[in-house]
Image (cartoon, rainbow, N blue to C red; front, side, top):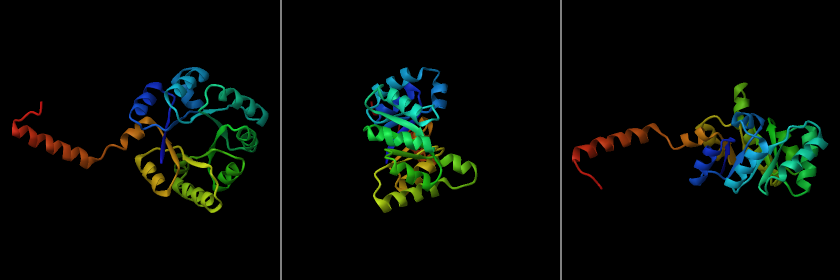
Length: 217
């Protein structure tokens, strides 16, 4: 499973990228706001750090305007994935932009039917939102499984990009189901390395080592 990092914070992206933990980046208007930077400027910098897909989201609501904004965003770098909402206009824009050979990430997906439409419109990525479904007492993992089944049934090449990931359990479950990609905030990715038994074992090792009175260097 590929790891995308869901942020527009340059330092966090660079740190994870240096460790080989970043296969791509996802951004959205809320993350751009949080960064406090110009969308074109910060997206260009992200693309210079990360070689994989960098999702940049349009803000228009009508298909022709989405297409125009998508083309403008695509000028930033060759690895831009144009992020479009899963609306009828978004699907129209997806069909046009994917037909031009551009990467398209269709976002805010909450049903397998929506994912089916996105695949037929030529989406490179479909972004089902797990956490937001969990917020309304619907198991977001059921959606990932349903999309995986539908896509495998018919050989769709659209990548399932599990989004709105809030916990390390979400990451594990997505990997077990077979999501192609997951995108998560930097802090969630870092938490994948922690386990209470690892901490307990390390604490015991350090206590025992101190008793030896030895030094390695």
